[in-house]
Amino acid sequence: MKKTISLLLCLLLAVGSLPFSALADTSDNVSFPTGLKAPTTYIDFNNKTAENRVGGQNGEIVGDALFIRSADGSMALHLENAFGKNAKQYLKLPGATLGDADFTVSLMYRASGEGGFTEWAGKWMSTAEEKKFKGFEIAQVKAGGAIFSTADTAITPNRGVSLLNLPSCTDGTLLLSDGTNEANKNAISNIQDTNWHSLVLSVKRGNTAQLYLDGKVYASVGISGVSGSMDGDGTLNFGADGLGNYGVGSGDFDNIAVFSYALNEVFFHRREEATLLRTRVMVDDDFVATYAGDGVIIATPTGSTAYSLSCGGPILTPTSRCFVITPISAHTLTLRPIIVPD
Image 1: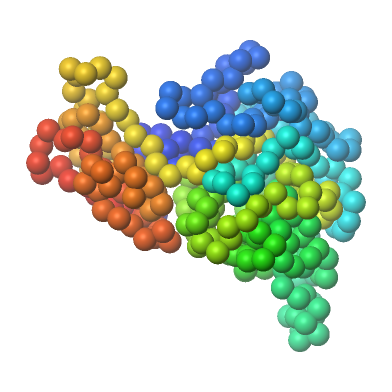
Image 2: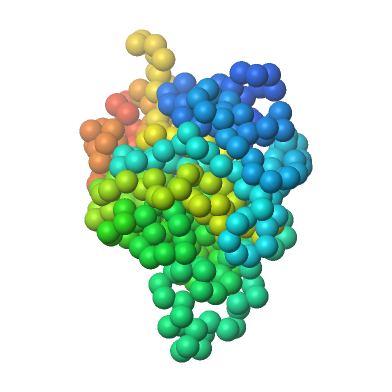
């Protein structure tokens, strides 16, 4: 059975899995939980524009896109494109840069129809088509559209980061490159079900890039060799690659956020010096423990070497598919760190 942790841990480990509309009121003010550094870009489409709700440069909606109702009843952006260059509809974020530092991209996404493109399916398996495919050049065959990207996806290595919606391909959906070194990981074909999904890409430079699907680690890839800028040859676009090509066939977007750091851990901590915090932890519906002390840390493998480690937690290998629950100054010696599968 796949495990999930309660205590709103969707927010802890994949901030996009908790719709930001739950954190913000319906006015013009957007607020974020205490201790969570606000994103540099946040767009919820509630006013039917690409306004950056946390300040900074606004996004730009290319083409005559529609606005629809999202999973939480708020507004979302609907995009439709045919396969190939010059996407007709996509979201452009000219003010969002990724550079050579840590970053996180979070969004709600739904393949509302033909999210990718299936016309190529069954054709590329031939030797001739495999030779033509040449790496992950989606210009060679109809392999899908870009959910978000800063790269020119028609060339290899394609400097930048791309998350592609490949409906049948089992490899190469997540692409990261600095123009010299590159890394890639598995497809996410199971999002082609017309349901809303949370997608979060958290990139810790010199370490790992982790893709969260609905709050669970779906893919983890080492990127120690990818040290240069991932800004690519274009802008950060949603629904198309960095140059505005290869748009998603039919997709819906909501609650887009870009953070200037990787999401590695979260903790619950007492507010006052002389108080005791009791935190009840459950995995799925199974009771684990009530931690009495200064608080509790929940960390990803990458985050296990930070605050959790200083509180006696174990070091997890970066590609481990698990979380660690570490008490902070527990008042009972039998309450020790626990590792649970993701």
